[in-house]
Image 1: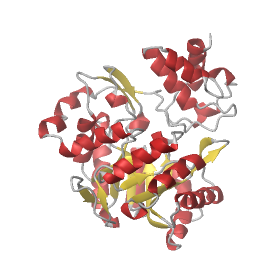
Image 2: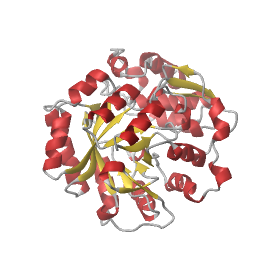
Image 3: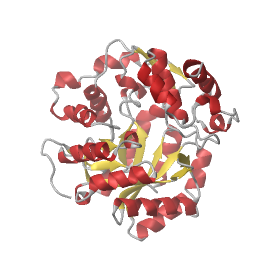
Image 4: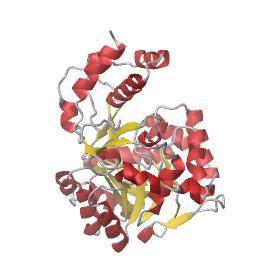
Length: 379
């Protein structure tokens, strides 16, 4: 690794001994973006000192674009990969197939032009049953260990959105890094503080995802619904007493016990700058104490646009349809209608099979959302 912008601050990723930037980069929102956008965002982050980059998807174009952005810069960053994050018919697909997961991981290395990732995550482990399957010697953990022995992964992590699952992983001694949602909306989530204390006790590094709760904390709307997926707990209905800034969100996340780095998802250079503004913000700008009283009531059924419901037999991009619908419910515009009209498959293509709702860990009534989209955009 080489030295970066000296305004960046670094923390040890616990037992890995890696010096990671306190603000890294999540890349989920760079999927389907033009290559020039991907290159600009990633290089801006690197040039300004961010050295931890999380790669969640396995789509060829997504990886090729990131590979182009990293050209000549691999030695300046720590990269991650996610075993179990695959694709099916062009859609995100969570797989527990060892063979399929290895195939997609090796393709990731090839497209990025690298021989290894620094942290290899067992991706999106949501239930105890799933955890038990993944952690078998013949499961994804066994694959991760073999890839580590082959020099294709330096350290092993696990990403989860469930406190019980995360606690088991940390106490197992099998992982070096935990990736978990840490944001101000989750301040009151039962067990979260004990989980972070366990990470510190077991020398497990914490990568905080969802610092903005999928952008919902930054919404101009005073009343928002933040799902359990974004918080690592039950969903939350929030009435904000005042606007929340990116700096306040990051200040809260980085103040939590054991957190080593956070990976805000950025889809533009402007969003990178908004996140990195934390580094030079005043104590007054970082103060989040007045926000904590807003986070009390918990609910279920909120879509967080994660697409864990996929693949869809009708090839509907469920997350994009619901997100467009919710934007339109705030204010319908010609641009939103045009965005919807450009979708290759629309809500009216839903065959109401219900498979998406069986997969959804957050109790979203997807079929009803599709009907609402039809009424909003197709009548």
